[in-house]
Length: 496
Image 1 (tube, rainbow, N blue to C red):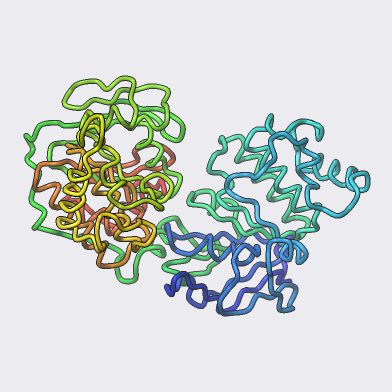
Image 2: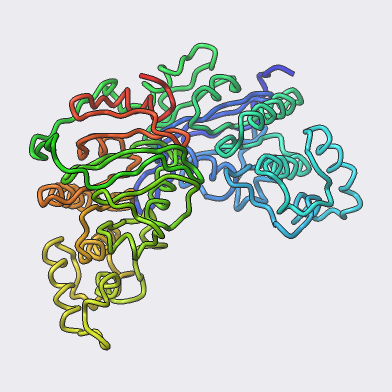
C-alpha cells in the first residue's frame, strides 16, 4: 500500500510550556496512512515533547489533536492507545522476568487465551526470533523493540511512534527493522520516525519535518531533500555559516604541556577514542544525544568500565580508576544530571560543597568552622544566592544549585575539570556565570573538557572542538576553523 491522502493524525497549533518557558510554539504536524514521517531536530528542539503529547505522556497547553478527523484529548497513554496511537521508546520497556507473551498483553483486559493467536500472528509476520514463552531478559535489543511494536499492534495501533529506534542496533538489525517498517506501512499503518541519523531518514521516510527551537521550520517530501538541506534547516535562522570569536579567552600555547591523554578508549557507547588536553586548554566535545560523550566521560572517571585503552595524567597512567582516585589525580567532574549525581538536595548546601574534601576538614571530627569557611569562599567567588551555607539545596534555583555542585569540584583543587552539560536547566544569568567560570579556570591554568549539546556554546567557549558521532570522533576543529554548519554536519555523520 502506498502513502494515501487519508490523514491519521493532525496536530494543530500545539503549544507546551515548562516553568513558563515555551518549548513548543504553535506546531502543526500530520501523518497519513501508509506514510513514514520523520521528525528531525537538534537537542532540545522539542521532538520528544511533541511526541509525548501525542502519546498521552504530556498534556498540551494549547492547540488541537485530531485522530481520524475528530478532536481528541489524551488524559494518559491508555487514552492514546484507544485512539490507535502507540509510542515505541528509544529504550524498550520490558519486564525481564516475564515471558514475551506476558509482556505483550500486560495491562490488556482481554483474556490471555483470546490473545494468543493474534500475538503469534504478529510475531510471525514481523520475523520475531524466539518463543513467546521465553523470558524477556533473554532478548536482544532488536527483539525487545519488536515486542514493543507487537504491543502496539495488538492494541490496534494505526500510528506508531519510533523514537531513535536504531540507536543501539547493528547494521543487520537496522536493515531488518526497515523491512518491518515497510511491511507495516504496506498495511496502512502510519509511522513517526525520530532519528539523528540523516542517512536513515533519507532512506526510510516519505516526508521530513524539521523542528528548531519549538517551531516546525520545514516539511518536505524526502525525495526532494539532501543531507545538506536537512543540516541547513536545523541551523539558527541566518546562520548557515557562523564563526564566533572571543579574543578575551586568550590563546593556548602550542608548546603548553600535555596535562591529560586518552589513548584508544573503547567501551559501551564509544570506540577507539584518543585525544589530548593541554594545560589551560578548553576542549569542547560536540555531538547529538547518543553520540557517546557522557559514556566516554564516565569511563574516564571510573564510573563505568571500558574494554580497552589508557588514561594518563601528566604522562602517568591511571589504573584502578574510581571517582575518588580521579579526584586525587586532579580530575573534577560536573555530571550531566546534577540532581541524580551531583547534589544533596535535602541537605544544607555546605554539605555538597565539602563532600569531596571531608578528610581535609579535621580528624576524627569535621570542623564546622572550616566547613563554613569553604562555603563562604565559594558563595562569594561564584556569587551563589543563598542566605548561608546552611540553606537547604532544594530551595535554591537551578543555576545556584549548579554553582553549589561546581563549588564541590573546585574545593578539591582540580587540574582538569570535565563539565557535562554545565548550562542545562539554568537561567540566562547563571549561564553567563558558568561561561565566566570557564574562562577563569582557563586563566588560572586549569584545563576544561566541555561537553555540551549547545553548539553555539561549544564554539564560543572552546579552544578546540572534537565532534563525536556514533561513539567515534568524527572530526576535529581548531579555533580558526570553527564553522557551525560543518560542526553540525559532522555531528550527524556527514563529512564536511
